[in-house]
Length: 107
Picture 1 (cartoon, rainbow, N blue to C red):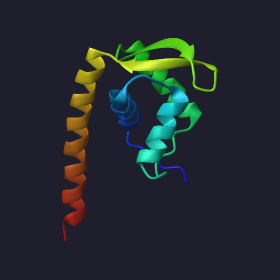
Picture 2 (cartoon, rainbow, N blue to C red):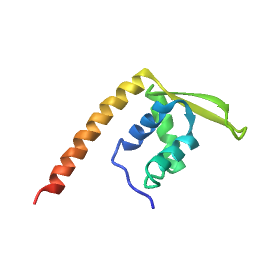
Picture 3 (cartoon, rainbow, N blue to C red):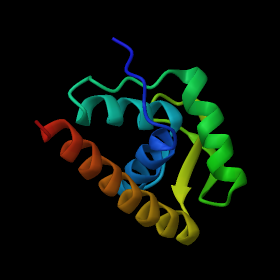
């Protein structure tokens, strides 16, 4: 089932995933899917534009390499600016989640 994400959430999830080290796009999508117990399934049509946007913003760096399956792929890693942005976005997300929880608990 496809779950819609709040704006900016995909970027935050990708940045958080890359805190584990450099990886290629497919591995990023699979790790997000695995950690979320298959609730979050990132489509290629969303992931690759996000990776390009993150790279253009200087939050990740990509370089070509070879996967474990001996395929050519672009591997991404988090930059220092990306770490700063992740911290800022994580705080914004926490504030939003707490605000939503307060509204939902209201009776």
